[in-house]
Image (cartoon, rainbow, N blue to C red; front, top):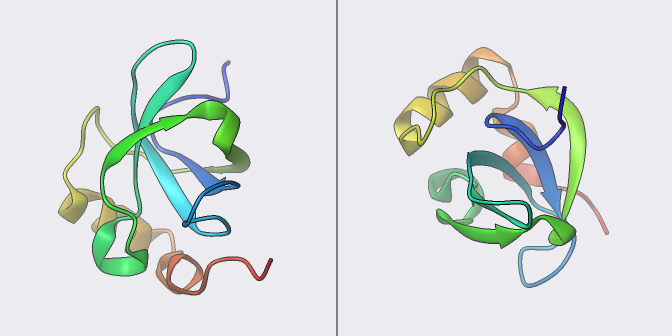
Length: 91
């Protein structure tokens, strides 16, 4: 089992979104993934990200490949993680 997988909850460690939670929506290659916040929760829009800029958590959502932000919001709600994503980490 690889930790870099679709649906994995991560924390951004670098950049202006450092300390915010995000979700991997697509694995591009060995170095890059596509992530989303989703934007309505914590202002992280869907974008490509280097895996070195992510800290992986043990949480994983059951979402399909390249899921829409609406689908991700529903998955977060069912996993009771909505408030966690809104607050982020205190760095």
